[in-house]
Length: 320
Image (tube, rainbow, N blue to C red; front, side, top):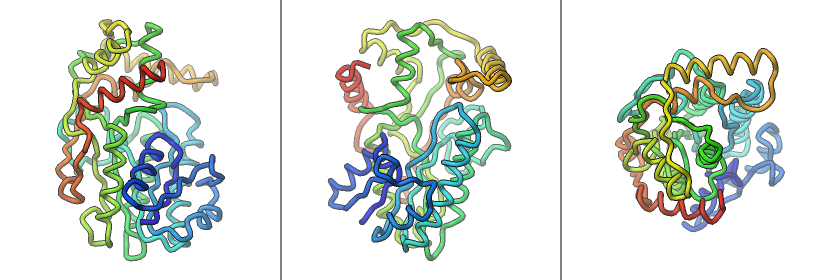
């Protein structure tokens, strides 16, 4: 493959570029760092010339920010990527989506690909990622074959978001177990997420291929109990385990109030709690890999135990 990777200098994008090259494919990492902006369709089209597959990984993530920023990057940016693919003659597109596009605030246990989009969203990130995913899947056809992958809670060495944020809160004494603390979640080691993208692209031969026009959950083979798993990480780093609790309803109410205060008074930074975060920390969200296995043979090469060990070792080395 001659692959073009938007967000190719980011956490997942860089892992994907490494795996593509290790497998003998050429890979062009594209990001603002390399002078490619998904907000500029013309420059995207020129940069994509000569490539036969695009991995659209770039996105504005997070749980708080200006709605127009999420729209510009996640929706308009994806429209530009689709248009540039057609203009540059790219035949295959693998889009990095998120399970949050179908998160309705309740438990999802062993959920499959048939989960519907919710009627409303608790944050702009899942709302705009859902809009982008719909655009990508609707674009599937004879000229451009598309698929979407939904890796859940990506972590691993070099993680700039998930674990460092939780570790910082734990060290500062600002983290509490939300709800009963028994919720199960699917995690995705970054190398496993990258493998899934590579496997999906290889199976995306034409518009009738099994992955074409469909979205797939991607995660490690086995879910974990979220709070005991986090406490294992904290203990390995010399941080006291989290034992304090806050009822899920109280956390949700506090998140709603914090969002109102931040919006009403234009406060800078991120609220200490949001409705989306409260629900994510209190509910179970696990997903079956069966559709991804059937469609493109997804098999996460790194076990949960090995992923945990490698992640903790990296966190220690980085002194997170």
